[in-house]
Image (cartoon, rainbow, N blue to C red; front, side, top):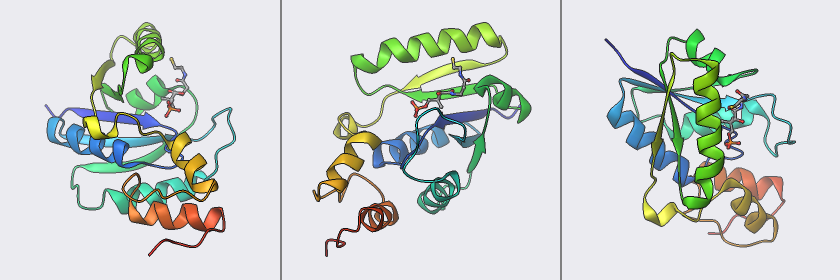
Amino acid sequence: METRAVYPGSFDPVTNGHIDLIQRSAALFDHVVVAILGNAEKTPLFSVEERIDMLEEAIRDLRNVSVASFEGLLVDFVEKIGASVIVRGIRAVSDYEYELQMALMNRRLSNKVETVFMLPAESYSFLSSKLVKEIAQLGGKITGFVPAGVEKRLCRKYRIQIPS
Ligand code: PNS
């Protein structure tokens, strides 16, 4: 039987750390759906459509990965699309507490869904969308932290000249 996994998140914007995790998940599961939360409390920098575009561009070489957005409870989305696994990345011990709480709550909400924690490459363990946005906004170099298309869009958002 095919195992379908969902990798959920805000992806505002997608970083190379996320891409690393998507690649690792794609090697483990038959199909991976990268799922962007649409109705988050926090105001995102990029619209859901922009985030879908950036992710689709970044994963276009991965044949068993697709991108979707969802609203409401994650476990409802996971069940609705016939998936059984939620993938979440843990970069450092500091991530663990929040991730554990979410995983246990999701298990309480649905006993059909299992959460799998994965580790990104060590070189991405310090990387986050929030830091990348802050660096870009302050005119710092974000090359290597995000896919090239995302770098361009971030520079455009903050009206910064794209580094050559
Ligand atoms: O990238 P993020 O912001 O850490 O992702 C958090 C996300 C989207 C996975 C989480 O906020 C989520 O699942 N939201 C959907 C609403 C939901 O199901 N809440 C209960 C979680 S226990």
